[in-house]
Length: 492
Ligand code: ZN
Ligand code: CU
Image (cartoon, rainbow, N blue to C red; front, side, top):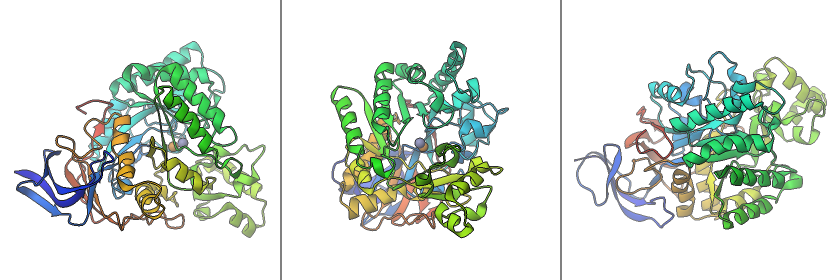
């Protein structure tokens, strides 16, 4: 007897092949049978709907959200069953409970709240909270650098390097899928290429990844891609470029040149993959984007405030509107916000990306989808936190025809699972974990907007995590069936 049967669905198996009709039977958390399946303790008729592997968010900052918000509904309701955390050089691990969590997490994790030091400890702490979705971790450069040398604006001493390497090594031994950097952020921006190569080398024996928020995504994007590819070659690791984009109107279109570099590297045998979020705005900790001695007016004019502990009334508003209303120069307003108590915790949304570049990115065969959502639910977060995956299927598949549905699903499932070492996930076939999303391709749509970002999408009927029905018609089933995953390991 099966535990669960999903009947009469169009099955998109994640491989990129066309859908086929049938049932899916689940037993002991895994897919037990496909085709016409037998009796089950529980079942759902999915007539007219499409069943795919659960979506995989390759770029999340959910490290601390797993502790604070274990229902993870902002992801689960999108059909996301697994995320990769620890991106952009900021990870919950390693941690020193005696240190300032804001410095170690760069503000983009919205803090770190647990009492743990390493990956094993973090996983234990998260599992106690019974999370609804699966998590795979990266270990972050900024985090280990703060632990080894605080915010020192210099290269590491040989001893600092040993300390950092030990942290990275331990995380990889415990099952992290790779080493991440955020080279525009502090303290990562104070590192030279050789430091990153030395640390990325730790990933090589594990066949693990080097993922990067590159040093520059604007005027020097192409140099940054060169640096990334050099790091991959020198360290002999698979490189994954995070949230690939060309920032600022003067650079729009450059993603084509940058992808040409990636294609040349691929042709030369290098392992390279990327991800993108389907929005024309980025989001991050505002203080990282401004030099207070020379505040960029151009940038300030395209910024909207997401969350701002110092001025809650600014949340959800464009800086230029606030400046006009208050009759203050916009650069002064930036200074006022960033230098206020708690001002460094301000999260902003900046409209810096061309629509056409998103389409160029999504058309690339090695492009995955990563939300880059910052799980701070106070204020008005970037809508990507709630809308990324349905948005790709609604806007770029159904409306714009940039990629076909089976291919979009492949990029959100098997490609991500294979790249990030998630064993027996990302596909629908016998024997794999039953992470599944049941949706209507004709109506699936993101409803989260910049004005009203905390909205669950429509058109997703149900989601199963490790074989357990976890969302039905947008309602949390309180299954708590998420697992903590270890890179390329059968058991977790
Ligand atoms: Zn980033
Ligand atoms: Cu990020």
